[in-house]
Structures are given as C-alpha cells and as structure tokens.
Amino acid sequence: MSERHRLRSILALVQLNGLIPIRSQPLYLLSILSSPLSFLFFIYIASHGTYFAFGVTGGMVLTMLSIGTGLQGDLTHYRNDLKFQDVVVASPVEAPSYIFGMALSELVYSAPGLAVFVVLWAIGGWATLPGAGVLVGTLLLVWGFATALSFTLATYFSDVRETWMYSPLISLGLSVIPPVYYPISALPGWAQSLAYLSPTTYAGQLVQAASGLVPLSATHSAVDWLVLLGFTVALFLVAATRAHWRDP
Amino acid sequence: MDHALRARGLVKRYPRAPPGTYALSEVDLEIPPGVTFGLIGRNGAGKTTFVRIAATQLEPTGGQLEVLGFDVREQPREIRTRIACIPQESRPLYFLRTEEVVYLYLKMRGVDPTDARRRTRDVLSELELEPYRRQLVSNLSGGLRRRALVAMVFASDAELLFLDEPTTGLDPLARRQVWEAIRHAIREHRTIVLTTHYLDEAEALSARLALIDKGRVMLSGTAEELRARMPYPYRVTIAGPIDPEALRPYGRVTPVEGGHLVFARETDARELARWSLEHGYRLSLGPVSLEDIFLEIVGRPLIGIEDEEAPEEPVEAPRR
Image (spheres, chains in turn green, cyan):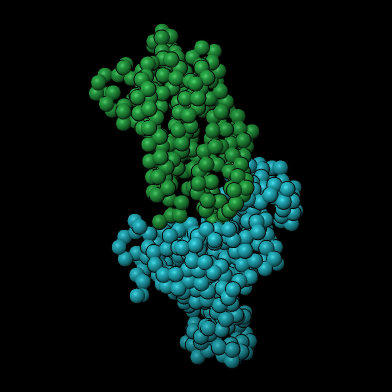
C-alpha cells in the first residue's frame, strides 16, 4: 500500500469512528468530559480551590487516557460483535494504519473535551509557550501508550463486557493512584514508590512543572521524559509482537 | 493461474481446544478461479475456520494453503490486497448510512474518493439499495443490512470474495434478495467462496461445491458430479400403506411420513414407477437432492437441533 493509500485508510477510519459518531450521537462529547470534569469538581471542593490548577492539568492527562479506554471498548465491540476487524484484516489496510486511524478518531472525538481544559489552562494563567510545548509532547506520549495498551488488550478480549472489568482497574492504576491530580508530595512514601510504576506519574509531573505548579530540575525532567518515552516504546513493542491482528 | 485457492493437508487446532481436537483435519481442496464455490456443512463442520484461514484472519496449525498463488502464512499482505470478506455474523456499523458503509470501506481500501463515490452509486443502484442510500443502517431490516455488506465487498476491486454464511438468520424473502445480490457479482466472473448450511442456496449460487464434515472435505465437485457419485442417483417417494419388503428389490428403502422413500438406480426407478402406477400408488420421482447426498455421506441431516450451539471444534485427529 502506498503512503497516499495509507493516508486515505487512516482518514476513512477517522471519519468512520470519529466524525460520523459525533454527527449521530453528539451526547458522547459530554459523556467523555464527565470523568475529568467530575474529578476537577471534587478536587476544587476538597482543596477549597488550592488544587484547581492540578485538576486542570490532570484533566488533560485523563482525557488522553480516556481515549485509550474508549478505544479499547470500541475495538473490542468492533472485533467481537460486528466482526469489523476481520473485515479490515481481509483488506489492504495494515494493522498500524488501523490502530493509528482508530486512535486518531478517538482523539477527534475527545478534542472538544480537551479544548475545555486547554481554555481553563490558558485562562488560569498557567500557560507559557515552552509549557505548551511540554504539554503537547506529554499528551501525545500519553495518547500513544494508551493506544498501544488498549489495542493489545482489545485483541485478547472475547466480549465487550471484559473491557468493563478492566477499564476501572486501568483507570485506578493510571489516573487515581499516580499523582495526576495532585503533586506527588501529597502521597505517603509507600504510595509514591507505587506511583512511580505508572507512566502517568511522569506525564503528570511534566505537565505540572510546565504549568509552574511544581519545581522540577532539568535532570529530573529529562528522566521523566525518558521514562515516559520508554513506556510508550515498550507498549508499542508489546502491541507489535503480542496483539492479535491475525488470530492464533 | 490454475487455482484461486489450493489447500494441501491443511490442519487447524485452536490453542485452547482440548487435546486431540481439530477444527480442520488434513484438508485438501482446490478452487478454480472465476467460479462461485460453495462450502457446505453443518455448524461446527469447519467451514468458517477454512474461510478465516484463507482470508488471512486466522493462523493455520499445519499444512499449506495458497490463495491466488500466495502462501497464507508467508505472504498475507499480497493476499489482502486482492481479497474482500464478509465474516460470519458480521454487521455494518449501526451509525453509518447505507452509502457510507460502501464508500468508507472503499476509501479504507485506498480507493480515490471520486472513484469511491462513483462505485458506491453504481453498486447501490445495481443491488437496488438506492432507495435506502441515506438511511441509517440501524433502521434497515436484517436482509437490507446484509445486502449493504454484500454491496460493500462487491464494490471493491477484490479478485476473490469470501461470503461466510451471508444469509443465516434471514427470512426466505430476505435470503432471496441477498441471492440476487450475489448473482450480480457472479456475472462479473470473480471468484466467490460461499459458505452455507442451506443446500438450496449452495445449489442455486455455486458452480462447484465441497461438502465439509468434522473438519474434513468429504466430497467436492459440481452438483451433477456429486449426484453421479451416489450409488443411487434417483429418489422415488411413494405414498400409501406399502410393505417395505415389496420395495426392497428396487433400491434402498427409508420410511418417511405417509409412505416410503426409495433411492434407486435409473432402470429400477423406472420399474418402480411403473409398479406403483399399476398398483394405484401416488409417487414422485426425481434426481437425488444435495440433502440426500449429505445424508448418505455424513449419516445425519445437514440442519439439526444440536447445531444451534455447536462449537467450531469437532473432535477429530488428523489422519497423519
């Protein structure tokens, strides 16, 4: 398949799973915003506004993670209930184009929600140009590893109900325990060690530092980037080698 | 190319299947290009497993399968550019419009948008789906949804189409509508592999057939060739209270409701017809049906109650 054909495949998938569902069920746009906004609300109330900025940066990270959760559900449903993955496998569309197209479609879907947080971030006065660069880079990496993880898991699930079981666990491991919505210093020592097992801890720290909420040394920042990148590459390698495009 | 598909000793054992359980057991099969080939068999016979391996959706365990001259294991990419498939129990995405099902599929395959639009228009018109063009798939009947899927793969430029039980679960009218859609593609002389457990469908649409049971190809050829391989090529149904012993000299006798069914050779069938008329019995005479052939080869009818939940993993070991 030529690059032009690949691009066409990806755009078709974006249209199919991103733009058309928005046209047919616009309420989903609100639904995807509900979790991050709920977190933001609770954090605002519980901290008397002190951690509001953390809630905004955390909301952006969680929205990107939600893309993964949504993708996992969609891919499982399309694969098992509609046999759509089988239709795609028996066509010139290659697995990377399918994953990228579907992940991009979820991003399109989540874009309005993300925009709400970006606007809050800008209004709150936490935005700077270098900070915006860090934010975009971090969120893209979160999107990347969430996509790789979701695709791999989705190819193992035999029923969409399994995603309902795993999604809250993934959410707990990637967005509740890790300091996405608060500084890592707010966690007790044992929880900090646990949090460092999650890639979102590094993403959270980078975004918080880029917004001027926590201090982060250049070395610490470099380590965070490397670990986050390492997680993303590792999860893509797992997807490339362990995900079932053709069933065993 | 001599064959669109050629299987040699094809074996499939699912990873979680109990030991000694094979879905395909040493399958040898050749499908010529440009024909519609019907794979018939009960649920769980191995039809879908065969199609999924050929459509590069499933890894084989052993043996060889060439699709359009390419090896399914080593060259799936080359195969995928030349095939299209409607998997068993597949449904179009419910939030799409009928025209989007076709158009987006074509775009996904890399077809230029202008060409995709033209092909979509043509196929919808040819398959009489034009009135439903703007309707959401979720508002269509089961038959129309399947036709939309048929339109989707027919609009592609794939040389080989796999249709895995495209009419299962549809009412007779909807089945006929899907048949018409398939017949349309047959006119284009593409190779179509059709799986079904409806024998009338297989016979109506397929130039050649293979009968699969418990992961093995039991018989293959044209419907006439299959009939010719039966020891008794004719079936005579006689109504009335007749002693079956009186019928035995003419062939194999099976009791049926209200009378007897006799499988007979041509001369015996003629004799039996004369005898029945002389004795005032009503009779019907004709060539054996595919159902009769299936019953003869497999020893049980094609569709049974136990089929409903039958897994696609019959307990059979490969011969070698």
